[in-house]
Amino acid sequence: MITSLAKEQNKETAVGMGQAVVVHEPARLTSILGSCVAVTLYSPKLRLGMLSHVVLPNGNGNLAAPAKFADTAVPYMLSTMQERGARRSELIAKVAGGACMFGGGRFMDIGESNARVAIALLEAARVPIVGRDIAGTVGRRICFDLSNGNLTVESPGHPSRII
Amino acid sequence: MTDVSCLETANLSLLRELFASATHDASAAMCCWTNSLITLTLDEVCEIPLQNVCADLNLGDEPLTMVVFDLDGGTSGAMVLTFTEQSARRLAGSLLEAEVGQGPGWNELERSALTETGNILGCAYVNAITRLIDHQVVPSVPHFVVDFAASVLQQALLGQVHSTDTVLIGRTRFQHKDAELDWWLLFIPTSDLRTVMERGLPKAR
Image (tube, rainbow over all chains, first blue to last red; front, side, top):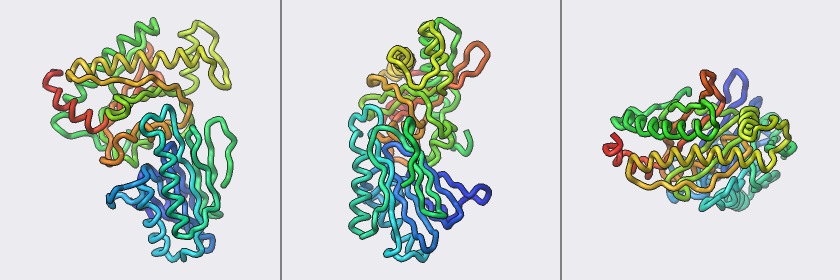
């Protein structure tokens, strides 16, 4: 479930659906998001960061894959960061993704729900959310740079932005 | 594909036969539609861990042109037809007997031509599955999308990701005469449809 070190060769690790990765600088974590949401936690003091690629808002008690569900991903991330020596008071969070892609159908609210649950839990844990790039109707390619905590977001047809 | 855990079950060869038959029907429909010798061949039937889906399908991290539709409102899965922009423009130009557009963006006629291509392919594929397993599968209206394939796949997988950590995917490749085309058709049944297909397999033989 969790990978603690980025690949030595290029220091860039792709985080797939339902995965979480925690890593020190120098490293970059990347993901491509549609309705999924990336939640990042970062300790500027330790240059330690974690990214969870959340797929669904609620696990309904499923604890086998904590990063897959927003309601389990946030507590899992907080405990993992604390185990790695980061104090909760020094953490900052960012949230990206949660698009409503083509059509939507019966799943049209999933992206929004993913973001809403993650944000609510981060707020309840009093972790400041210093960047958000959520909702919309297109995908996102993100890159989380552990050297400075920047989260670069790119979408087709839109200029890239850093949150 | 790399690092893919291909199905080792007794049903694998039967599922391959089923998907190959559907691919054959889709291939015939494609030949009629394009009035040329474009053929489809079943490439892979694999079960892939959820976190590896995008990497193992090797769809890249650049935006692709896609036609997407769900099956039975998403409860049975989804199909995704992918093209690189260049190949999509070439196909649209050929279908419309027009100069290949240079973009940016797509005009209504080009969108319509590509969407209809997906519709014809998908309906032929799904109709064959329906006939062979004696269980009706209904595709949705197709959606034309230019986006990251991984983003689109996430939406396509939503109907099954809660209950499973692996995904069954049938991937079909395309050829024009002897040349490989950079198009792919992904058939992504849910576990419910997979069960129905496996039950219906004896009828398919």
